[in-house]
Length: 209
Ligand code: VGL
Ligand code: ZN
Image 1 (cartoon, rainbow, N blue to C red):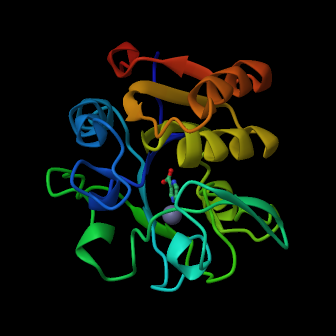
Image 2: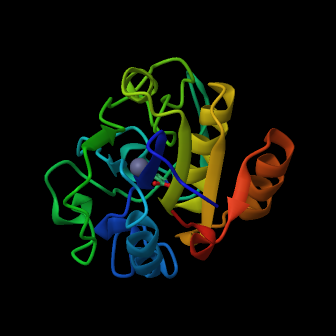
Image 3: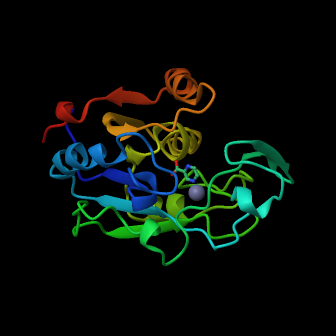
């Protein structure tokens, strides 16, 4: 697949806490770095995102006495999965994985910084109305097709892909450059949602100039 100057590679949440040894480790999370680097060499435009929570974020299980990580609770905006505390602003766990080397990235977008609302998608928070501003950034810069890679395939990557489709953008997910959390069928659901909404799924090796 050919990429051009209107394409952007969104590298989602390749942070220590989502990699082996991290607070919310995704199996093989660090293995996304090599395919991301290979894909990145073809792109003129790269945006990195960072999950970036206050220490007392409402998605953290310890904020809800009696509740365990990976349980679901009802928030004012709907169902919310509770997570171990992760990606706390300024912590080592919130830093990019040390092997990720993309100094050419033109924007680092942080999300999840509102205490009372989680944000899986890089476009809209989990209340589905609060914008991160990324859609406006892409529009103003003439970036009209989105390629997605990173962590986690079934959460931040999937929510971002579906929101980009809702915004009317063509979306391509680089499957080998993602790893999943896989909670209660979430990986299969993401794949089915991609097919239903027209998200294209390719391998990073299929990209060319
Ligand atoms: C993510 C769960 C909680 C992700 C972030 O980046 O996929 N998942 N926070
Ligand atoms: Zn998070």
